[in-house]
Length: 290
Ligand code: FAD
Image (tube, rainbow, N blue to C red; front, side, top):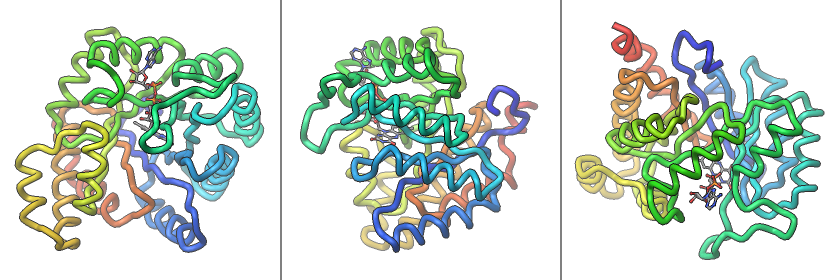
């Protein structure tokens, strides 16, 4: 899709719900976002869910809709045999797209591969390339993965991961387009040619975003921080700011030639719907062509 695109490729990320209410919220979000005709959606593999649950959710979303769907796969807590079993299930479910990840350790612990498991996402990518015919997507970090000692070694590992068989990269969330453009330039300079899709999370809650950015080493630009702080505990005002900021951020990225936008929806539809509706009216990618 990305290789043959004539328009940007928009995608939405969901997570497997933990409760019945969560399942209803997810169904409502998928229904609401369906009208925006995403190219694909993806479903994460969380610590609280199994790989089989992610696959089943992806299978169901794909069967009920006209768009493609990708399953996130994590190495964390799985042996190679278990990963193979899950990949077999994915293939037998008729799915063709995987987001191959290492996964995170439980909070506060250092990542350790299981005995007979994989230590890096590139190992999983390698397994998929050698034994499965799947389109493999992987993660990248414009502001460097938090465990990496420096940006150079992180980029060198990313190059190895792409060479192992990655077709598309999706970035971690970021709020500084300058950081993305700098990363993209360095990645291209290092020989990475696959599409790099910006991952954008519309801010809906100030406390949540401050927590995510602190853990992930992600910059909140001073103007955004100032506006966030000015809104204090006013949730509605923060959410409005989140939509406005993400719309401007995406417009600049698309005008600069970004191949699409992957929205971290957090299983909610209003912000993503507002941003994408504005982008489709504005069509900033046409500026990129002219
Ligand atoms: P890797 O590519 O393995 O990199 C992890 C670290 O190891 C980096 O610091 C890298 O520099 C280093 N490294 C890589 N290869 C080597 C090597 N050969 N030698 C030494 N060091 C190396 N997490 C989930 O649990 N579930 C999800 O569904 C999920 N979805 C995500 C989707 C996206 C788009 C993104 C950006 C992240 C997602 N994550 C998810 C989070 C991800 O699992 C974590 O960020 C994790 O810490 C790293 O995963 P990775 O695949 O980037 O790992």
